[in-house]
Length: 269
Image 1 (spheres, rainbow, N blue to C red):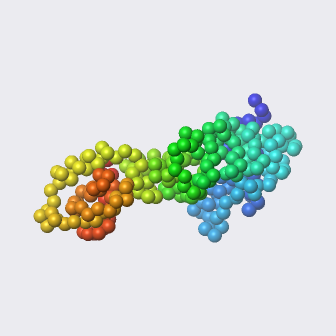
Image 2: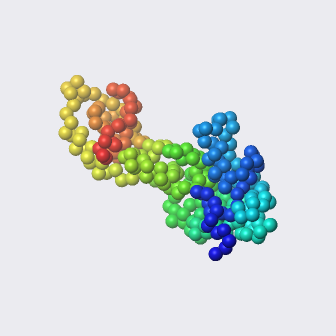
Image 3: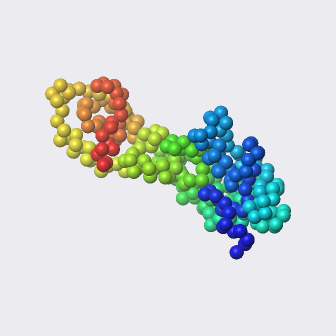
């Protein structure tokens, strides 16, 4: 085994060098360590900043502590500072099991193996080849923050998934939503999985919940989050069903107040 291999690095990468951040002239294990440190809640908002990967000019060998220009092998002790090295991104990583590759169109390194991904020019990002003939293009699909945790998606180190509505989000954030019984896109509110069994339960709940006499002839207008249809329906305290697609993922827009249906998560529980 190569000298120092696996012994150095941080929670983000195993590597045998550190970086000097040109913005603040401080030393960090990697740019993510810098960004987490400089954007923590303890830091004055006016002083918070990030370091672009392409701005890094100097690295420090973890074995001999020699500071030098960005390069794969240390000029002093000769150690390989990262088995994977990208001179375009100034990026080092000893864990090559990630199958890193540089995407020229994205302008950054990605993981998963170049043979397994394709770059969509309209979306401006890389997708799994399994989506090549089925995904709907959305301009700059990942050039925004995750709608749940607000981390920028384009260069995140976490797994990303594409919802049926074409909005992108961290996979772990979707799982967290599901742990809280939330099954609609946080951007457009469309259901992102089969909700037919929940709608059937709501049918039974609506049918078994008698409304007071004063509300029997009350009508409200609803907007369906799933199909976009506007409908006028009988007001019910439990939920309102879209007349077009039978979804209960609806919100009241006019009549007897106006708010989103709120019983769906309770029915799922």
